[in-house]
Amino acid sequence: MLDGKCVFCGIIRGDIPAAKVYEDEKMCVFKDLEPKAAVHLLAVPKTHFKLLEEMGDSEREILAYMLGKIPQIARQNGCDNGYRLIINQGDDAGQTVFHLHIHILGGEKLGEM
Ligand code: AMP
Ligand code: ZN
Image (tube, rainbow, N blue to C red; front, side, top):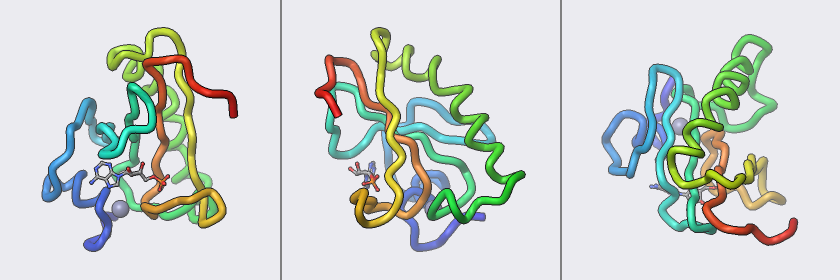
């Protein structure tokens, strides 16, 4: 379920410190170490998946669960005027941590994409 060498699995286990803002049995949300916006959170499933394409139909349900939780978590953490979600996939997207994660960016007017 968790990967011994993965930094986000280490955060989920509590072995690596992180500023967690939300946690339940299925997901964890913590502050990005190098924020790219006034609010920059990372939402991660408590199961190690590298990429969306690794997930089966039933495993993919965690994404719907996370998307259901994110609006309230975002609002409670300073994104009360909107936010942007990003899921980087692979090298061309610049993915650096290969544990599936959803970036939550907000707390200010974001630049156009
Ligand atoms: P990505 O480029 O989509 O793979 O995003 C990985 C993100 O994880 C980057 O924004 C990093 O700043 C962030 N990051 C890496 N290590 C940590 C950590 N230990 N705690 C919090 N955020 C981290
Ligand atoms: Zn992991």
